[in-house]
Image 1 (cartoon, one colour):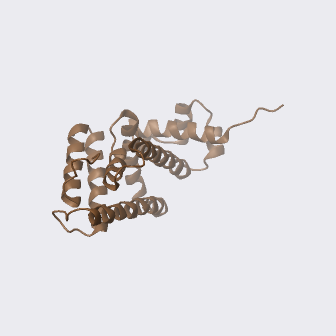
Image 2: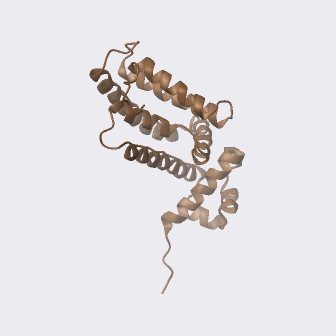
Image 3: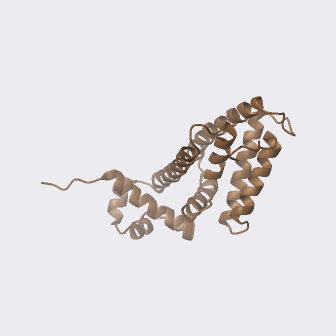
Length: 207
């Protein structure tokens, strides 16, 4: 009986090898041959699943996105159903920060991929769709939080506030993965930005 092949597992194996190369050596070192060697498979196997480097890169970024979504889901589950919208928003933003080794690997790849996408409109468009969904969700949480509490120090439009929060997280992430800023300090900056945009956190808030 022929051996059953888990094609998704093989694609994931290849993508993880790509992530390690991108994180350790940069995207310029990513090639079908280098990825095959890192994954311990043949170049032919890599080409069977990914015809081009762009296809391989797109799948690798799906892995990074799935890792982030898994962290967000775990953070939400840890909070419980009774958590406030503000606590949920903070948990999502914290989950996006590269606070552990795996997240830092993902963060280095994400930064490299942004530069890669900058000169590839089709790749950039896919990133933009994912970012827009996140942006809209954060903006809605800002509206809900503001409606339930005292006015914040600034009356920034919720969409602008969402942009500011995402930019804060992305900027802090860059500082963390480049070794310029410790995680504890980054969390303090995030909380300060939340206070500016949403008002002081309630005493009993999880944030």
